[in-house]
Amino acid sequence: MRQLGLLALTLLCCCALLPQGERRQPNVVIFLVDDWGWTDASLVLSPERTANHDWFQTPNIERLAAQGMRFTQAYSASPVCSPTRTSLLTGKNPARTHITTWINARGPEAKTKPADERLLVPYWNELGLTEDDETLPKLLAAEGYATWHLGKAHFGLKGHSGADPTKLGFEVNVGGKHIGGPGSYQGEARYSRNKKDGHEYQVPHLEEFYGTDTHLTDALTERACALIREAEESDDQPFFMHLSHYAVHTPIQRHERFMEDYEGSGRKKAEEEYASMVEGVDASLGAVLDALEEAGELEDTIVVLFSDNGAHNFLAGPPTTNAPLRGGKGTWYEGGVRVPLVMTWPGVAEPDSVCEVPVISDDLFPTLLKACGVGPSEEEIDGVDFTSLLKGAGELERPYDLVWHYPHYWAWPAARTAETGVNPYSSIRVGDHRLIYSYDDEHIELYDLSKDLGERSDLSKERPKLAEELCARLTARLKELGAQTPRARETGEPVAWPGVGR
Image (spheres, one colour):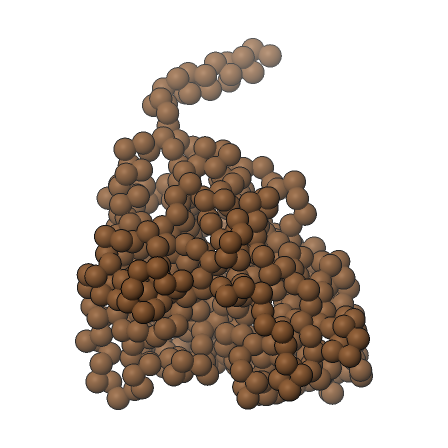
């Protein structure tokens, strides 16, 4: 008993010596890039170095990776933006929230055309998030965090609460509304599609940069760094910054400060301008890291670098390739959902470390709550806390299989071929095997990613029992999530769950 009393006295004395108002919770910066591909950086996440790694110039991404952990098998929850973005804020898979495709800025999707699409899409959650939803910024704000959103939001439908980040838990919003892309990246164009104020696709809250030569990425960076400097004055309060760049989403437009590194390369114009946009994002990351360091906050800040889906590989130029992965944004292949992830956590994540365990955007929600000392959500979520991986564990206990569910058509009708993989689908990954089920023509593809990362050798005919098992597991998980399948055009009723030999 005497020893316990001495221990308690010692702890009280130590606490008394701590400076008043000392903060124990870390800051969090989520640095989210739009449509950024797995190999669109000089940082190598693939098994072998590719031509992309020598083309893109991203020293600050490498700098961040040297401070923390890079994940070679990180996934977005969807091959398009809104479902992934909302999964990150809620920890819930898109199949559960029914936010299963991008939220149309012009309102609910137009009716499908029989000549274009064989199936009707489900009655999905076209509103997106609302002010009634539990979100990461709400939970952090309740624990005393300052919460800031900068850049692309795309969480909710125009005219509804989710379109405004301040209704979702962010006390500051710079540039976020219902749109999925900017009218322009150029300050001279006022970040507007028609160079005039008031256009739907004009990026708001950046009036001081309208009419200047400031690129949109740089304008958002300036505002982000200003918030960090202001926070230095009240450093007893932790902050959560969600810096969500519109780049490198279309329109593919040159970032003038970096064009000289690429212009005249002999490559297509779209590739050169896209590379300048990527380097602009890298420079933004460097500026944020510098601002954190100058404010004395870098060692107290968790930084997450992530992308919401794979890169364009057959649209807008195309501006890049996802090789060695097959497919890209909007497709059911790895190129649509395998994305870069780098995470620093001073004192926890080993510097310059690598993790090869699969993780998904849903997982960031519980992981960051745990890191910030906030209790787990009382709601049913799908993300798994991967703190153990950051501490060096070689595996993650996950109570369910990783699944993707996109019951929609993507791209224009002529692009909807078997090769592109843009029709309604669900897929599952178990171990190294990935199964894809297409609702449109009821076919199955099965790949062994450990031997066939490019998904070229379909094993579904060779290994029918495995295909049948994975279909059953996929269906079981989709039913647990309350997923919605597409609907038959003739009856309007949901079509059958994934199965072999339909």
